[in-house]
Length: 209
Image (cartoon, rainbow, N blue to C red; front, side, top):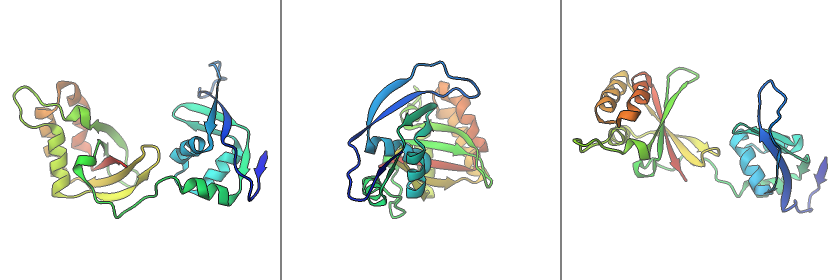
């Protein structure tokens, strides 16, 4: 394992191999070789770990990562703490002072309630803004109206989505009302997906930074 002691600059690029992950089987898929900048590799690691220096360093030392259905390998290395901190400072931090802005929202994730919310699907703005032939409103308008009436609360910054996440808790009545609006206003191809609104207890609003 390479060690980059304090004062020694990390390499500008790192050879990385990757292939599709095949659970419970020996992969026969081709292995791709590519050079990643250190920042690119750390960016990918952050999507899994969040901005936790200890966990980031642990994965860099391990030399492997599964991300987006691919397994990546590189020659294991251990950066000095000050070098890793310098890289991490280039990435955003969660910022609870950032207020929710409906115009910045590009997607809404539907989730169930309980201590461990379950994903029920995602609504993308570009799809949900489409209006029917005889309607002046879209289901996206309805979602953003609910967010204006009860502004979502800041949750965290998602490195995987490169976005701030805000949570809007839904009452049973609000969820049912949104589901009825979806049945009336949403494009026909989205209606089956949006039936999950009736079971949603919270919406996670995604606002890229």
